[in-house]
Length: 245
Image 1 (spheres, rainbow, N blue to C red):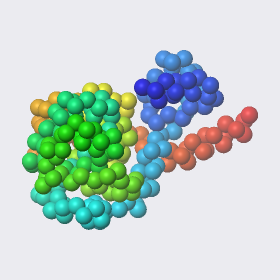
Image 2: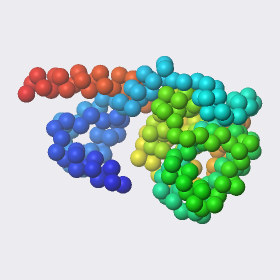
Image 3: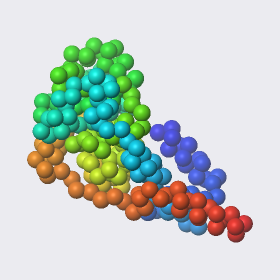
C-alpha cells in the first residue's frame, strides 16, 4: 500500500523511530534499522481513545440526532457498528453485493448501524444495490465525527469493519471486532486483542457473530503501553535524546 512505501522511506531518513508495539522493533531490524534508533513508546492513537472516551457522545444521543430508529438501542442483543470503505471491498459490484447480503443476514439477529463512507454510499447507488439495505434492521448514517463514532463503538456488541484504525480502537475499548479482510497491518490486535480476521467468507462471519451473541466471543487484552500515555513517553524520550546531542 502507498502509505507503507512512504513509511519505509521515512524510516530510512529518521534519527529516532517510536514504535507502537514491541514486535515492531523486530520488523524494523529486518529493514536494516539499528536498535539504537528505535524506541518502544506505545500507541498515540490510543491516547486519543482514552482522552476522547471521557467526552464521547452517547450512542442514543447520536442516533436520535440523526432521526434513526431508537428501537435499535432496545434490542436484546444490542447493536453492531459497521464501516466499509476499502476499494477491494466496495469498488467491485459482486464483492460489495456479497458483503451486503451477509450484513443482511447478520441484521436479522443483530441490528446494524452503518456509518457509510461517501465512496461506499456512491457505489451502492451506482451498482443498484440499495434493495439490499434493510432499513428496518439497518440504521444508515453519514460519516460521523470522532466523538460520535467513539461513543457508538464503545456501546456496540460487535464492530464489523475493514478499517485499520478501528481494529486498534476496538482493542483499546475491549469490544469484539470482526475485520472484513484477509490480512491486517495491525497483527497485535489479533494476537492480543479482540480482533478476528473473517475475510469475506459468509460462513465465517455469521459463525463469529453467533459465537459473540452466545457469549463466547474472543477475550482479548490491551497491549503494553496502549494506556493513554504514549505521547508523554515520546516527549520524555525525545527530551533526553536532544539534551545529549
